[in-house]
Image (cartoon, rainbow, N blue to C red; front, side, top):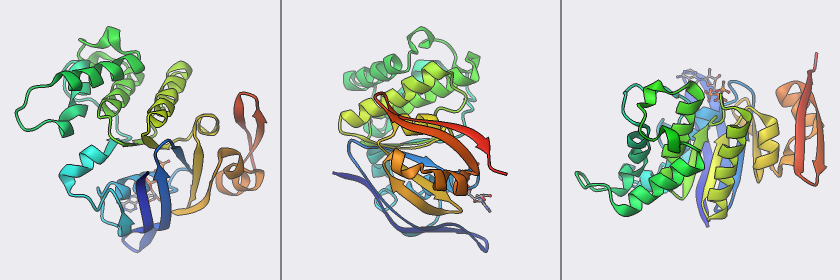
Length: 252
Ligand SMILES: Nc1ncnc2c1ncn2[C@@H]1O[C@H](COP(=O)(O)OP(=O)(O)OP(=O)(O)O)[C@@H](O)[C@H]1O
């Protein structure tokens, strides 16, 4: 089943074209990595797909009535600041908001989803702590858990692994793979090409607001594309543990 379909999606800011004619389809079971250098248009693509900024062309999520979007897609933005000293569990419960009617108390199935997300992100010992007392990486894990608790068919996450230690980066990517294995889909922007190579089922490479590759990780991160788009060389190999990619040097 198709969870997200973008057709000729374009975004202009002033006279600048930030995103031009993006076409993509994301189906259940996929973890699609969105990669590209700073300013390539990753955040713009995600926000336009969600209908958070004006865009030309079509997005299947943006076309929904605003109150239906929260059931169709969970969104984890890049900004990580948790401003209020409420408990970790309270923040993660906010992920259930689209499933609740106004004023309705949290139901057993909501709490079960919250508990699953807390377990997946290893947050049980933080459950009753004010979120403002956590480290930056711990707060990021709380926000990933909030988006997982939403249990929407599609999860769109903007650099969710930034600032996480290696174990928690892997845990976050594995939680996305698990969600995909359960029939959901994930669109995730990443700067860490090694993580993207190893954990995504497909990569979309963005450059200057356009898609330059949309393929299996090993087919998207070719020597030529990596040099032309990222300006680097890399070691890469398909191993029995999957596709391994390690950036090496900046191309002068
Ligand atoms: N409101 C705006 N007005 C003008 N230009 C903008 C605006 N918002 C974004 N841009 C430009 O659009 C381009 C794409 O920005 P975007 O944030 O989507 O990139 P990104 O790929 O997410 O980058 P990063 O990896 O640095 O987060 C950038 O060149 C940025 O300067």
